[in-house]
Length: 321
Image (cartoon, rainbow, N blue to C red; front, side, top):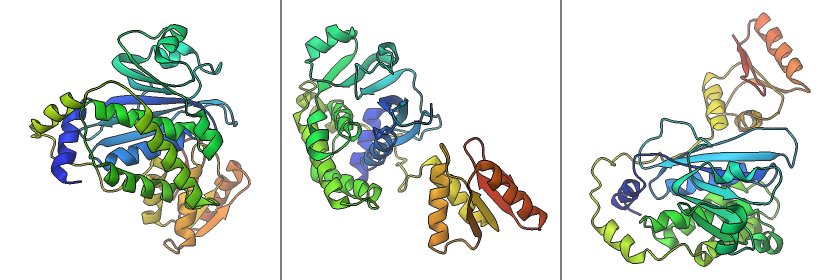
């Protein structure tokens, strides 16, 4: 996909950020799905960020994952207010008030419900305003037959809604990019190749099956007449999570001692940094501790002995020089 086409896609999205939120339970893959989606739309020229909410630390607790996309570089954080996309895995989940996923959506926004109900029935059942586009699709069968999370599959509908606005891409091109992204995410899993194939089938099957509205002619006219001036800056070649970025900073600092107790929300920092250590990219003492307090005491001892030390915990993290 050439740079001009990506630039035109950025014009269509516009400079005003579009916010989205995935309403799920912990363990449903919402955090992973949002990260993968932002990685995917980068391949068609769009800027994106994602950040999860961290609530009760237990599997099954309600967890919202926020993402934000734009045609220009983002300088704001993802938000769960003024949503352009509301993606709901289970609209009857008592863990989420309907007002949370319905009333936060702006006029002209899209609500995507995983439900067996038709659009007409769901509109009445959940009192969806007429100013909002409602899309219903039942992807539970994909979860049962292919063992894939609904979260990743439902984001195919979000992609389709962007296409309805006029964005263009070669499906072969994006499918290859999507396969690479998913393969990287699940490379450490058993039966990784099967997981990738199942997610590909569920995602593109949903993309082709879902119906929004017929905007084919409008899309062609708009895209052919776009003036892309002002949207020259492209999305970055590589995306990092916040945790990966923090780990990369520590890799460059190369402290003498790194003490790690894995706990939400900093687990990925230690996980990424431990891979640096395993690959020989840092020359340190890496210590996996049994608690946050013990990791902090280790770096106090390290600094007392004249060594640079750092640790990561669930709040702001600590570093002592």
